[in-house]
Image 1 (spheres, helix red, strand yellow):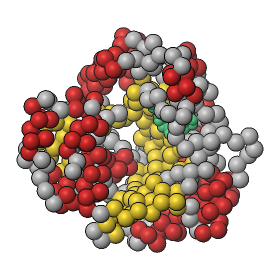
Image 2: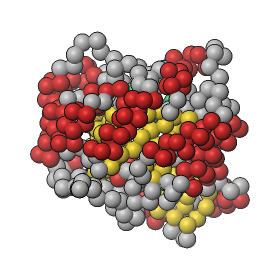
Image 3: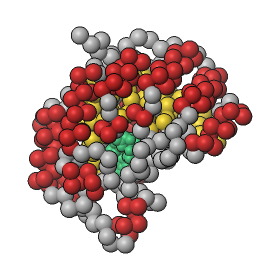
Image 4: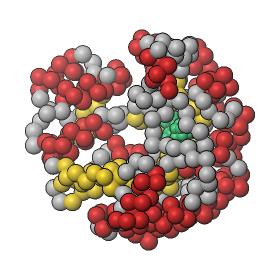
Length: 393
Ligand SMILES: C[S@@+](CC[C@H](N)C(=O)[O-])C[C@H]1O[C@@H](n2cnc3c(N)ncnc32)[C@H](O)[C@@H]1O
Ligand code: SF4
């Protein structure tokens, strides 16, 4: 039997401390994606990256001080292009710098096309205990449209292997695709749920500036569902996943209660995390302030900076209480459990503006959970950014 990683508990006020490591390469760039991912036609010098990851870890450890890690996340890009030995070296490095208890959640993102059973077993042996697979669609036409390198058959094989090898697994789907009907999505989602274990990430396609999809969309050559159709797709998603016992615990993340991603909860509960690798962000509390870090995005520029300075940070900003109050709201309102108002008051030094709160409540966008928590209703989640803007400062 697998040693299941420890599952989450309700919000106790301790959001945990996560470590994020970014692998910035992909085999091909998907036309919708604006993540920090790059394609290289030469093999990547993984030993050089290991050395740089370890050096930047040492810098982040100096900034964070001694801490107990509650989760690790290897994200990308496509981390499953890393050799298992690279993953092992990264995880060993983390354990040398911070206290890493046994059985904490260690997630890795993987693409179905970069799957080989041997690699998956290697990642598991290195310590990864949760896999997050980028499946995106369960029909070949849409996979091609999304520019993916895998087909449904490969996705299914990857899901099967992940289920066999890792104690925990999740996969991602993108919906609100061009010409997608509610009925077609409902069918696809039901099929996905039948393959899922206890966690799914279901993202609405976003047209990101600077991507090929953006240019096509602007030129009228890529038509995506309009606001009303998107709302119908979102509602169908909530109904079907909720009905199958996997309600949304965050805007796009669904889980059987108890199977939520511990690492992502740390972000949304506004805990601290160290961000290592090109384009990684971090939040490290020091006294009343929180240090916001961001590293150089371009992989080779980041490498040179780390080799020269011991880190690739290009931003180090101290956030005061007001800024932390805003960020806490921005992150916490994404969660079904909402935000702990006492914690928000601690940062902001005030109650939510009664008029604005009343207005949003009357319109059915927010609600109180008892006296102590505030959350978005499903309708509020659809206009999350404006709700946050209304309540903040
Ligand atoms: C950083 S990617 C990493 C996963 C992996 N590289 C992959 O694509 O299979 C994380 C997830 O973000 C989602 N994503 C990326 N760009 C998106 C967009 N423009 N709209 C909606 N979802 C997006 C995809 O579902 C993807 O799996
Ligand atoms: S594989 Fe993932 S990270 Fe890479 S370009 Fe595609 S969506 Fe982005």
